[in-house]
Image (tube, rainbow, N blue to C red):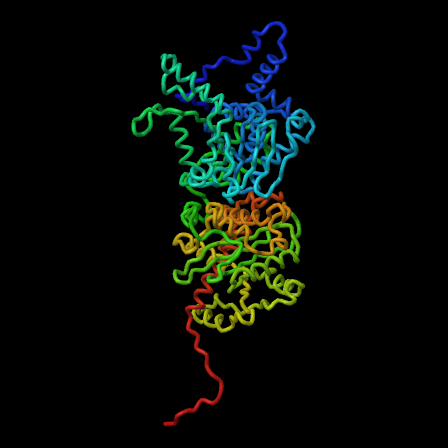
Length: 625
């Protein structure tokens, strides 16, 4: 369904009709201008000519809307090529509006670089020869920005953190990918202030003077003045649908209201409205874009709420999983507040480390997952401040990572999945990285599932000995414990005992502090696409932590509980997601390691509060009576 707005009326003549009326030969300058005007108004033809790609009709519409509207929002089904389409737009807009400055941003620098990388790929693929000739010099991959000049235009992919580095930029166009991951504070206080530059200030001054004259003579109305401002800044948001309690839905509703109403909610006339919302589900995709068998399988196995968000591009009230997305949102430290994610612990704080090991070295295997909780003993609360999730790596690299965590966080308690965890601890203790280390990790007798819980806590406390390295709790995954641990995790979220750290990207001083602190970054593998140390790998590391906290919440929201024929409960991903063998498949390992860490926090707090009475050895006199 297409709903035409009540504001922006495009009364400009059709350029194609004008070109058809031209007769005879054109001078070179006239021919150049006519060609540019034709290409600007016909993105399908322009994309094929410059990039050698064919656009679907909906992609043509998206790019036309991005050209014509100042505020554009695309809420699309997963896999509907919104990022690829945005890359095409960036090329065309930069080529046909010389001098324009375009920023590409996202929650993580990696996501922003993906669009930039697609732009580079266009120039290197067959059919992109014309575009390659438009690029001035070579693209620059710096630690703080990836840049490309197209003639006098500039395209820049930026990280959101390290504001001191990027504050010198000013842009005309802001492309925001995965908009649902950004807070209103980041969008309104960090990103929009960059949009203050005019493409051609002298031309704008002349246009403003001419428009003022038209208003004065009554040829146009005062409220129509903005229609002639060709250099207005653009904000282009790309996203999947999320939840109605998040800022994205508020922004979406604001756009819809402005498009479909003449007056604001106070009764004042709405002016300057140049908005477009394109909400596109999988069902409108052209034949061949999606695999029909996969879609049918997803429709038969996904929950209704999940199907609406992921494929239907519809906002829902909450996740349909065991853990509430809304409540996890409420347990997330607000943007700009502490504690943030950390790459180095606070020496005055205690930390719990949880490990869910995986010895496979395949990209499509489960993640080897770890997480670190920062404890607040006074309130018995704790915050997820650091995480790790990788599928393809090796024992040596993971040993270096554990050594780093032990050296830079005050780890007082470690919990591991007994299925591989005990062996992992033993194996890394034998590696050279721990050979001269004072830290020798050992397992203590954790008896927290004793029928007499208080007695089990006391016995566990007796055997727990940090001075001897006996801080490793090996947890067996049995049906009874799985149910108890999940109930405890759900309660920790409901009662706000567990918190998810904010991103240091939102606090400039904190981001700069973390990206420059001295940690052994050269020894740390933390994602499959590693960038060289000299190009700012530590800044990437800080950025990556915020991504992993969000990943943990996403995995928790997917967990469904089912009862087996024998009466046991299982907590797992939806059936359709478990079948995937892709490297990009949905996983639950970050959820599992959080489940372990949350249980460990309970055990540690209970041990510290337990009173243990030790009986001294030797002769005890007896009084006879």
